[in-house]
Image: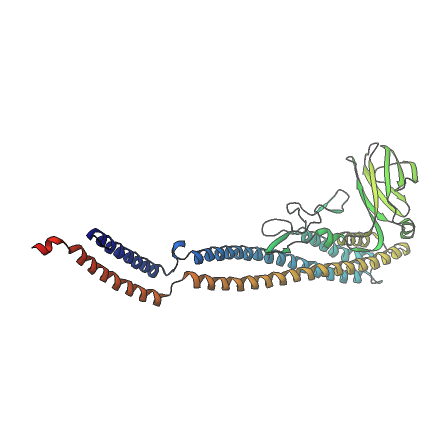
Length: 400
């Protein structure tokens, strides 16, 4: 096969340029310290790097989530610890009040500190995190969970939702607990009740069980107090059976039936309903309120002494139940923190492994690269010399 001078010239030039490009790429790798500068350098390795980078980004987000989870749960843990300490002190004061040698004035002094503890308990129940969200409001982080109504009772305004944060693929950790579960759903020493209403003109100013035996006899029936006008009302049980009919109403006077006493204040209109709903649970806030009220109002008469003794016994039982319920939630919070710590350690291990793989694929072997650059430089110089000789070949040089 015959080769023209132009073909030989082009082949030499192409060879020299190719080697020069290889040498330039090697020099660029040495200057950056990376073996793969573009996907063309190693398509398979570049694809693996993209996958590993995505995994690393996901791990970094998971680690941020875990930091938030730990922060939120640590705040809740501190608050639960405060409630536990508070309950311990409340039980101590209750036992002091049970001392039969205490006079009414001394019990009022104990009630004063219990009142302070009540304010502290409500404050803890309405705690917020660093973002200003209420910890114990369920999904309603922007709603204050415990609000005092016109009757002086603290009503839960949150929901029973439990917020969760994803910390790994398929793993989410709860960062909150419902205030209803922690503070409200406490088994009560005695059957009790709560009230609700559709009235806009009157409120329940007080409510209590005045005859436990009578109330227990009809428990768990619910009742409805229905106003037929501003001065009369009926009481029916949940089955529609009349308990009281066409009774006169005076604002602030107690309405008593089947062992319960409900005091309504205001001027209701016809159609206003007040619902008396039975319950076997009582919030720790209500238990503490009842104890404070009893110590402040029950005197040294024999009749009041009997009521006081029962109140103290019931209060101690309720506070013990509150401690038990609180301890269960507290243990769950600790378990979640342990889970977060374990997942965090796992992510750190996977992250280190990924970094090693990324380094193996992306980083340059300097010894190999320098050796390759020396070889490419030698070959380039040889190609340049060859090109110089080829480019000088001409028929006219032989005719001189």
